[in-house]
Length: 514
Length: 119
Image (cartoon, rainbow over all chains, first blue to last red; front, side, top):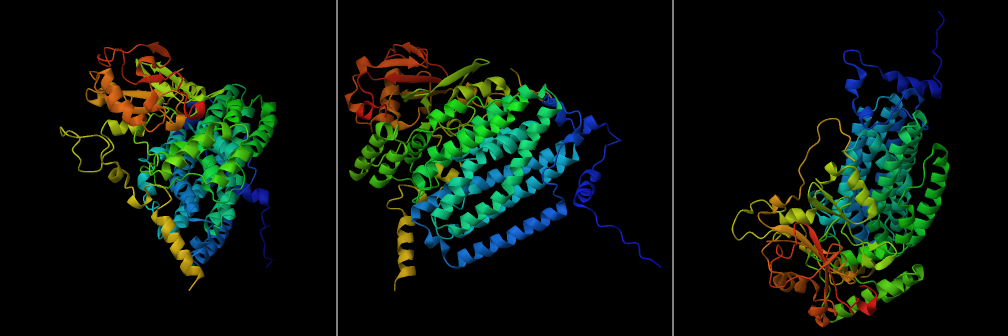
């Protein structure tokens, strides 16, 4: 008897069977009742089958690739940990980059994972649903590998253990939380523009250059490997975001103004979120790769500019905030470090005055602004520090109602004046850091009047550890912030004189001498 | 514009004045002294005297700056957001027209921060 051997499936057939063939139209309930989210934002889709899948990746192949990546990653992480790799970083100051970046990022990855899980359920077409599912798994993986990467540092250094608790409580983590909360509470298409396009495509490079290259440059093999492992997924994420933009624009001309408004909004929100990343590049890495300004020019102005040129054929224009970001690249990292330096008792990482050599580096990188506006501040502070009066601003900040960052940026064209904008909605006043945030608010005031602003909530008595009687006559809001934040006393204060500094020096001594 | 949503969408402001137990929020900013990074926020009773605002809140917040000791308070220019006003020091915030979430900005003529660069 002749064996009839089935022909091996080609890549394309296999892809079709493993993705599109798995989808079906509902019959017990009408499709629009099962998928109500895809229409209410106003985006018109006529043919879901027109969605192109640039990767043609099926789930079984996905597991195979990802498992391989994980094996490599954990082999390096284990080796790093077993060899006390933490002592090979350039300087103990570097660990504060991990405290800030890895302390804030895993919960955001988790939110991205949740968001893509939701969008995967909400989208109609099988192509985007499969792609969203894979991206969701990627994001959960990133969350997990980042936590594993910090766990080794957590054995030796302060300020890393309570990142999950602090995520929704700590004032300076609020901007990232607000970014993802805003995206996940929008509809599926806006979420795709927010995370898939603006964040992953337009801004991710700015995030990865300082983080991965910064880690590599400063001898942190562990964080570097985690970063590279995640970045290999990013290429897929970027393509998904861009594909979604093109798909919406090709489906109906009415989609253009909606998509453009989302591009404007989310590029701006992402830009605000990245100010602290820029600060990491300019102030926190003991060995610097490039200035934030240089990174902005290459990755945003040049690469981003080229992308928008490419999208011009669909009628898309460069985000409205483009010119303002170009002006601000000279200022925002300095304004951010000033804002962080002055709160030594209220953060899970240390700050410090830049050394004279570091000031010179900043002068060289920022010839138009640094010596004029910022050097005098740092020199004054260093002088005060020597006199035993390190600056400690004990007041609570004013925050933007939309991006939730502290209102610290300058009026466009006037670096000496703080930029204030406000709007009145139903008789109540709301404040913003910029025209762009004001515009976002005025488009959807019903959403942003609910913003959780940490300093305001403290004053309402809502940020207290368990057991505090907020109705007691002598209750003083905000008097238990350290317990509320679960802030490790060892991570408070300037880096100079910190336990991290002493331990690192002592352990390195042990590792290199008898 | 109004929000696009799948169903009825009505929520209260999280910072409505009734959430502050008789107090109100206010923000204070010393113009051209950006060393303090951003304005500060406080919750205070509307009956607080303007002079007390200066003494109890403005002074401890800003006295770290070398310019602070040199302020001639009779020459200070006050604004509520962008609108100039002349506060009556012995009168309350309410009597001076300072309401919930108002931003009080003050400029000290001749004192523009370290080296006169706004910081």
